[in-house]
Image (cartoon, rainbow, N blue to C red; front, side):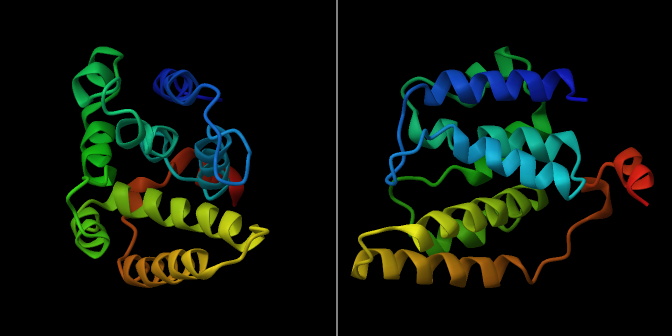
Length: 165
């Protein structure tokens, strides 16, 4: 069962991404929703799931969506903090961005799921070119860096873990 916050986060993601499309032509909102599904299957807590649902909203729609607007929509502070780490700033080098977000455990988990999902899209791309190859290599390097960190136990849903045993 979804928490109220996860319902709000999912609704915001759908609202924010609307009819937006990815490079491969699929609906953009399918990307964060796949991440939520993947992370739920791994038994992560709802805080992680909410951050996954919202991870691209501020970055993709900064003129419409801010931390303050999400706060008014009753998104919790731990999720908002993770979103601040997950939002890639325009003037920020990618490696610096990955190092910065690695400071937040929720952001690390969400970014690894993001990299996983994005790498499956890049891997399926029809027009394999040099830019895609560079993107793939950047994703794999970031994934390797982030995978060195331990995931704190509190990011897992204890009730879901007991049921799954």
